Amino acid sequence: MKILVTGGCGFIGSHLVERLLKEGHQVRIVDDLSTGSLDNISGFIKHPRLELIIDTILNEPLVDELVRRSDFVYHLAAVVGVRRVLENPIESILVNMEGTNNILKRCSRWQRRLLLTSTSEIYGKNENVPFTEDADIVIGTTTKRRWSYACTKALDEFLSLAYAEEKNLPVIIVRLFNTVGPRQSPHYGMVLPRFVKQALSGQPLTVFGDGRQTRCFLHVEDALSAMEKLRQQEKAYGGVFNVGTQEEITIADLAALVKEMTASPSEIVFVAPEKVYPRGFEDMQRRVPDISRLTALTGFTPVRTIRDIVADTIAYFTQSQNNG
Ligand code: UDP
Image (tube, rainbow, N blue to C red; front, side, top):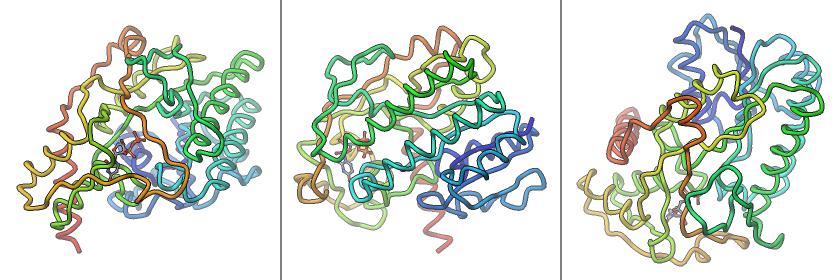
């Protein structure tokens, strides 16, 4: 198949592209390298079945042409990371809204199937974990910038579902919960790469708040298996699916695990988030997915544990350090 991957140079996108190439597909990436990087795809950048287009999905004529020439579209391009969203609010809103609108419009025009990645962020401050896909969205005020991301992604979902119903667009919406693993950058605020980098360089591991907040971390390869299973299920089209794991860990325990597995002498420090983030940060206490819809339809269950995930992330950073 000819597959277009928007955001294919990003952390998740690059793993997806690598997989699709191994499966024999012809893959085209469009990426503006805002958070993605060529390093992520360096292992297969010269692959004969890969074409790389460095441009933005805000470029409508380009998107039209790329979608026309594809059989399937994975739409991953978005502004990611709490830090980046807080520091670049205009860019985050425009790319997530106009960019996705372009993709949906063109997929509808050419009647191409697509999978759109949304986010667990849209459950916001809802405290009734685990979240089913039909759970309420509980978003904070507009003066807290963090919530703009959840709002734009929720609008992307509304728009996708509207296209699905009004125009018969075959679209799958995937809500990714904290997805981690090799190639995730520590630069945009994500906790695991930050802890691993801090531990390996002897810096203190910075836990924000009291560290009792929890997350469920899914290995990127598990996330991709789930997405691929969905793509192959006729009944997935027009639906919304949580993709995550139910293995929950507090952030303080995660810091302790990283410290133990790296055998690092670094101390673990507790930092008030307002000291680190610009205005507009608000944390959520627990985030746990209900994945029964996904499992019932595809048989998916995550296979990698938090220890496997931390080990893979450490191996990646150790190797990058050794490569300079
Ligand atoms: N966090 C932390 N130290 C860091 C970065 C993040 O304690 O250096 C916390 C953050 O406040 C949140 C959790 O780790 O409670 C997960 O943060 P991340 O940005 O990775 O994901 P999200 O908040 O989007 O779930």
